[in-house]
Length: 88
Image 1 (cartoon, helix red, strand yellow):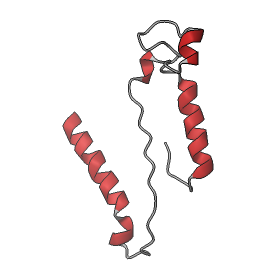
Image 2 (spheres, one colour; image 1 turned 30 degrees about the vertical axis):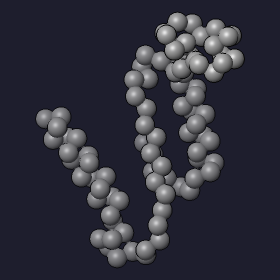
Image 3 (cartoon, one colour; image 1 turned 90 degrees about the vertical axis):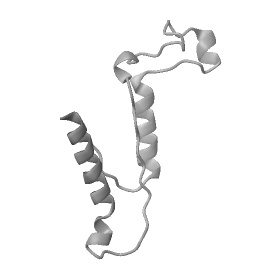
């Protein structure tokens, strides 16, 4: 069942990317920015790369990982520099 849904999603994405060809729209190219996140449920808060508390030393060396705020910041940054987009 899940394989079918994945296949259907891929088909829908490819169809959406080719809609200008299918309907004879202009040939202008566009930039597609895809943001992918994975396993954010375990990294809501900032942690060290070993899973512990992110110490001031870790922060100074920029080895901390996770934190949803980083994702939000990156999305806002990209919204400022990219043209209108589809989002969910």
